[in-house]
Image 1 (tube, helix red, strand yellow):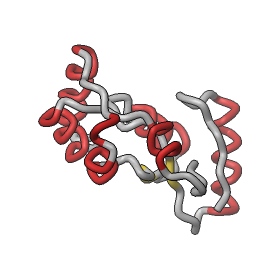
Image 2 (cartoon, one colour):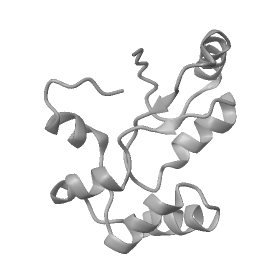
Image 3 (spheres, rainbow, N blue to C red):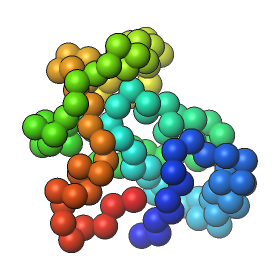
Length: 120
C-alpha cells in the first residue's frame, strides 16, 4: 500500500503527479479517504480531474454506524449539498443515510479509534 496525503481539493500539481503515477499503476486499486460528509465532492472532483476511478475508503454507512456517537449533525449548507448530491446520484446511498440520520463524520475520528492501523 502506498499512501499520499493530498489535503483537501487537489490542485494542478497534484493532478499532474497522480496522473503520472496512474500511468504506471493503472492496474492497482485506487482509494481516497476523506470525511464522510456532503463534501464528498472532494472525491468526485478528484475522480474528474485525474480520470482515476478512486473509490471511497472507509467512508460509508458502516463507518457512520460504527462511529455514530462521534458524528456531528448536518449544518444547513450540508443539507443543501447532500440533497444536490443525492439528486445527481453522487454517493447517493451514503448521502441519503446522512440526511435520514442527520449525521456526518470526520476521518480523524476513524483514525484515532483504530489505533495501530494505517489509513490514507
